Image (tube, rainbow, N blue to C red):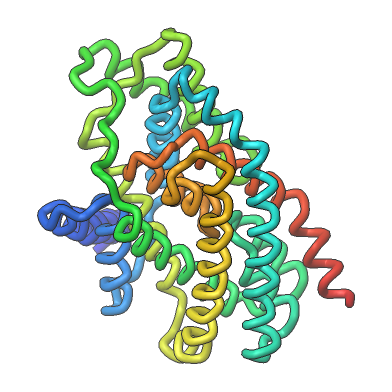
Length: 339
């Protein structure tokens, strides 16, 4: 079998596994089925020896579709929600600092991981930035990948069960052929443009902002076909689980227990912070927890949309955290390594 056919077969197998998991979760009536079902089915496949990766162009399209869908869900009435963001950002900063410190303590003091590995394993979200900083400062990359990937997989699996709702309708349901065609052209254009922007999560954030502007101003009626949107969510879920394919059984045995404990501690801090925050920010607990959750921007925004949890509020806080980590993480980890 030639290399090209082998790659196509691999893509088809990954797609079949992810779609099967999504279909099963949909049949069971579980929330965020396309994302969570795909991630868990792919995790099971990886555990049974499935290997491969989603090609970069397909990942790019999936991220852009996610951004376009989320942007179209934002409305002019969201201004009232965004007024709460500055106050919530203060709470987010406190929760982020405490959760990073608590997780680092567990991994370093209790688990004996070196200082840099413990800190890099505890930084929430911004995985691309974290991995670059980890490699530059000599962290144990295997442990960092396990801790970061496990935390994201657990969040994607648990949040829908804890805060699941009825879900959101796709933008432009019932829209005409012209609106759909223009939306697909927008997706293609965003893939071409934002693939070249060297900023973390640009493929999600850029199309999200552009889609929101076009939708709110009435310049374009965003219309995303169900099949394409579902395929995008399945792709993102599969990408989450495929990060584990480089992890061996030995590596997992050595790092699993501590990574789980660190996740529980960070999640507990996030939940306590969320419970305190909802007392002065009039938002549902699920939306605040998801906005504070230590997961990647793409997966957390996908959950916010699929669970209909104040996507504007969640998006604003996750983008703010992504920017803060991108700016501060290199200096913080370098300082921590020198101590």
